[in-house]
Length: 399
Image 1 (cartoon, rainbow, N blue to C red):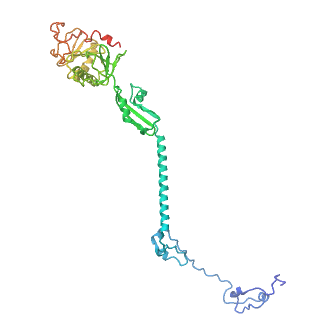
Image 2 (image 1 turned 120 degrees about the vertical axis):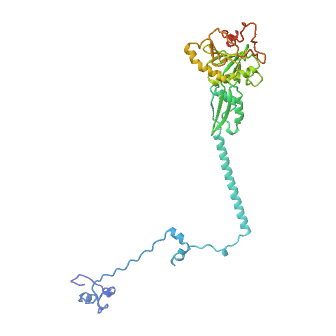
Image 3 (image 1 turned 135 degrees about the horizontal axis):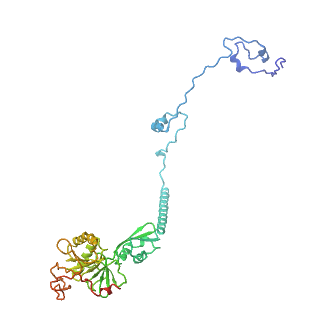
């Protein structure tokens, strides 16, 4: 032990061989360490400490992007370092072993089994879809649109359609035809509204007039379609027609289709009335002589139509002079002759009108003879003071 420094060294001393490069040329590595510590510093040409020269930093090679690698293709694999793991190469065709007959049969059985399983799965999916569609398309509601006179329940009952049935099992065309058997229905269509609804759209015929007979009354539409035959208590709002006879009409039949001059004249007159928009003003029509037709308004004014020709212009003349008659207070009595040549002629009540038709009788022979001796001399048309309504028509409207 060294007393001055307090250090203890082993018998073999310190191994200073790693430091020999920094010592002098005369340094003896076999001498004990104690002598080396007490030795004076050795002068050398090299400095005691020399900073090491900084080596240039090696640049890290940039990693190639996937795009550049894919573009380089096989050239990148050729330029890879020798130590990199090469990609496994596919087995060469020479090393492939051909399949035996047993392996071929096994492969065919597997393919057949896969096809069978695929077909079973597709069938199950198809049946499940059909079952779901069956329950989704069960009719749950039937809606009716376009009806005003007929009740929705009445139309649904006439169609024969019912809820709880599958919509694809219903014949919608036949249902529409059954609805159209009602004379008040002009047309009906039935449509599916998926998934569980049916929509019935109807167009109705409106009541226009009632033909007054001795025993029964026939209600007709504006186009002459017979809607009903029978007696009822109220015909309010309908045009009352007399002079048409009491028979020969059937429900669902259109007037004017047969060779009946009176019926054709009535259909043309109704079409002109509804075309002019005066159906609310006409209360009564006398068809006793179809060549000299009279109408009565709801206010009491008689309209002499004369022969059933040029009806649109005659009614247009009536609308033109009506405001003047109302202003003068003459719209509730008297007769307005629309069949005269030129402008309409108003005659107070009690005035005799000339016969514009020259007294031509009805071709069917069903009209009275204008030369009837019961009329006054020189009178060729009914007197406007006399009502064209028969005396017994009051009982016909009583129902």
